[in-house]
Length: 373
Image (cartoon, rainbow, N blue to C red; front, top):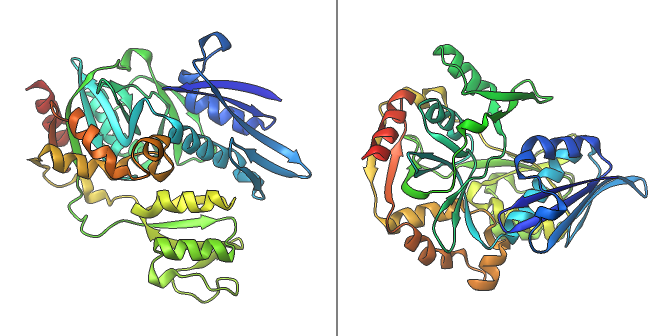
């Protein structure tokens, strides 16, 4: 049994595990968050990832014990569960699904859905002289509004690598760590490319040109008991993917993957689906969203300034923690809408924009001009 310790903002946690792949994955992703006993602050959360408890693997959190039947997914499941549980307990910062960078001490937030090119744009901006804070989490201090680094490793997909290669660009200076998947590479950017805490100068919300309807996700669970099915239907599954009680057969949009239930739902319902599954000890094995088309970066980018209120309302769905957030539950009566007021206050000095991306070099130049104004 090995123990690894990490600090995420105001939360410290220990990972106790006998599973080498889980320990390696957490080290690869979060080695810059590792702490010693002397560095730990406040209470410490404990997570256990065990390969054999009564003949089965288990992931144990403060609130739940998950039995994992799909052993080959143990490390990725543990990573997701630890991340969601820790994020939900953070009270010092508002965390959003967005890239964060700085230039000349001015912070830049770029919010967008998954598979919309945040990592590609982040690497292009770093290549252009910006400092890296995160390609996935924009952390705003709740009391001082500062943009705080979250320097996990970057997961660079094959499409991003090919995009850079086709243009004769090199990735910024980094250390590469090969994943098992040939389509993904984990990289740690060189320390000289990392930024420090700063005040946010501009918020940019990426809006795809074809983004008319809500994005749809394909979700795989390890099981689907009747009670959970009822809860998911109340949340709002798509009408053409309602599971059939007799083994999910012959239902349009609902299939079996190695005997596992697969259904579709709107991306805005993901946090609720995770919460419903966790309450019943059901594991979300996979959430799949379609990547943007290659034509995404072939158009002319369009920039539009938006009001602070519009920016706050648009950014709110990107909030990490969702309904499970202790901050939301304890300070805002369980409604994330309560975050609009503190978020709008943080955004008061921030210039807010909606950007329809296009050619990457032009998009980078637009953002560069905004920061240097």
